Length: 288
Picture (cartoon, rainbow, N blue to C red):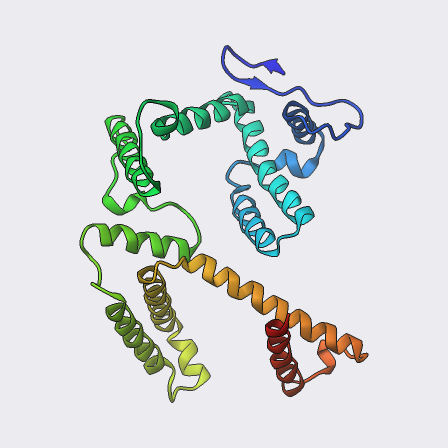
């Protein structure tokens, strides 16, 4: 690595065709080479990479659901690439480098685990969670002292709509804004579905499209209410949805495989035949 200033280092691009060594420094040098010589990599910015980082995180989740080692290794590598890519660009800007990111992470892990690295003794995972939240509050207070004040729900992390919805509800619940039990959440879901039906029933496609923003709001209300039901049942809405997506893809794959065995394509089939194969896929799941 070459020194940019007293703190930040910019990796020196690797020369020639590099070998896969499994070493972090070699990966950083490879990324530096891509930034120097690849037209696509050269034009990227930290902001332009944001969608890719989100996409790779989702693909990692899908790979874990599939439980294939090669796929998981590949997707973990893609997530790591996003970290390396961002660090390379921030180093080029003289702001920080990979060493700073790793140091920050190490400090945070030690700071948030006093029961591991210090004399504190916590009896179970619930106590660990309480202490974790206390430490995060201390960190937030330190941020506020630097002028980074936040409102109560600003602590909800960026993520998918389902993840944010569940976290918003969770934080509001801590402040007493919540149903007492799951029944209230289910009643609210029924209410929202009724309102959505009102926007759709006995209306032509043209009328629905003309009022599409209102339909969108009602649909969002239904999804938010359904997330609330999941939360009241101590289920993760994102995981539940991903499980459903994986199940749907598996069953649809079964349909495609069975049609191919009969010498047919999906485009050559109809809904009746595909629905029958869908039911067969469900039976296959139960028997396997």
